[in-house]
Amino acid sequence: MIPFSLLDLAPVPEGSTTAEALANTLDLARHAESWGYQRFWLAEHHNMEGIASAATAVVIGAVAAATRRIRVGAGGIMLPNHAPLMVAEAFGTLETLHPGRIDLGLGRAPGTDGPTLRALRRYAGAADRFPQDVVELLGYLGDPQPGQTVRAVPGQGTQVPVWILGSSLFGAQLAAQLGLPYAFASHFAPAAAEEAIALYRETFRPSVHLGRPRVMLAANVFAAETDAEGRYLRTSMEQAFANLRTGRPGKLPRPVEDITKLYDALTLRGVNAALAVTATGAPESVRDQLQAIIARYRPDELILTGMIHDHRARLRSFEIAAEVLRSEAPLPAD
Picture: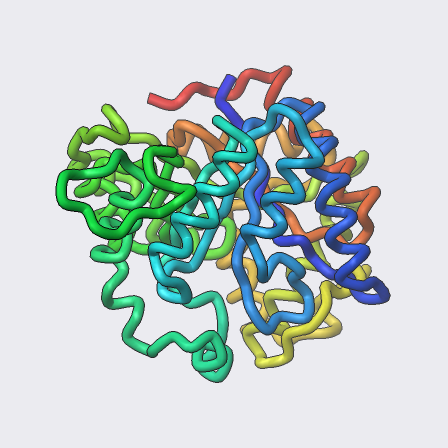
């Protein structure tokens, strides 16, 4: 059985509040732990009305406190928005409070727009320093070195596992060079997935962090009792993507029976291309689609996500996915 994890964006549905969204995240994490998910990750986004996980480390701490065994982490922290020392201190504190349960995934994108980036007091070229910032951060989380004058307290010596996140060849190359595990964002940017994964595996250099390449692949899931219901649930995320692409982001829309009445064909083609790595429908359909995804990309781990408007339907979707992945024993990764 391939390990499977869960990525939650703490979605804020239309008609709901951020308080309700965060309560739903805690509830989902408790269920995910009982269903056998290995990790529960949250992502950093800013100035987005439909996502409640902007203060990602704070939410991670709340999730870790509300659960007992599941690993909790960032998928990810957008490092250009932060000083590496402060990230090391935050995640070192989380690891100290919840030993052996914290992950730190790092992304290069700002996760926001230009005005918000300036509000974060970061400069536009910060992403260019991403490789150096990752190395600096690893130094703060590792064992102290002779002559080291700046230390992360807490943080130093905690060895929090660091993942590189990516949707292009850049992240694959960096993860391989540094000998770190790699998570590919195929749930919204699948175009370069096969090339990036192959490049990572071919050029991986073993390190003190990792002896052999490890790839986590992200996939959307919209599981329900019937194929029709799964397709209906999926329309919320399709609308969210279409709205974002057309400059109208907002809370997670309610699902609709016929999305073609809301958007033109070109917009929907773009949305469908972005969501190509997705399993939708009844349990049997989701099983077949997940097996096809695993057979094609051969990940070492699968991380599932899915923006569903109704919390009970979202719980059921991830429950079905877990049942499928536990019982059907999809093809193992090489």
